[in-house]
Image (cartoon, rainbow, N blue to C red; front, side):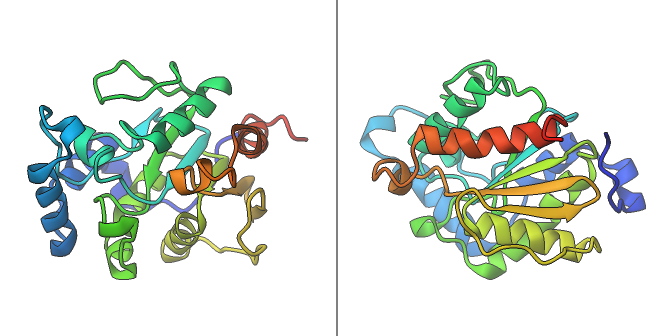
Length: 241
């Protein structure tokens, strides 16, 4: 079942390809642009021989997706290096291995934007598109990025489940809905596995972020993440009735 949601008339002339181009060319946040360029120039020793992307990173995936995964921001030596969100770092290894187990990803590894990975029925994006210092974008920087998330949302009308990776991603997604004029009913406090019925057949499911801070400490395990992903998948595919 398609998701009925408000769509601006301008979205009818938009495309995910155009959103990606606009994201890559974005210079709304000078602090983040300076940081991304500096990281791309300095690099780290293990990637010294690689050319870094060093620009904002667009979302990617299936335009007909029924599952939307929303993260925080690209990693300095992950997406900021490879040019694809959640690609080339341990967070991406964890995420795409899980998506592969559930049939959303064609392979369990995401090493580079030309590695052949394809997503089916799933689209992956973030509330901030530039790698931030200390992995902490400022609230104003997230707000400046919100228009890109809103455009992606309007162009993904089949989405029925949204998996938010972390509190900041959850809050950023809900803020986008409110700004787009979509009513947001009250929901539970953030927690791993919490579910927020947004009405109109849309379910928001929350998970701890797939960062090393959570996965290396055991706060988030493959089993606990799979359990949350399975809830989002069941709703996305209409199997939770």
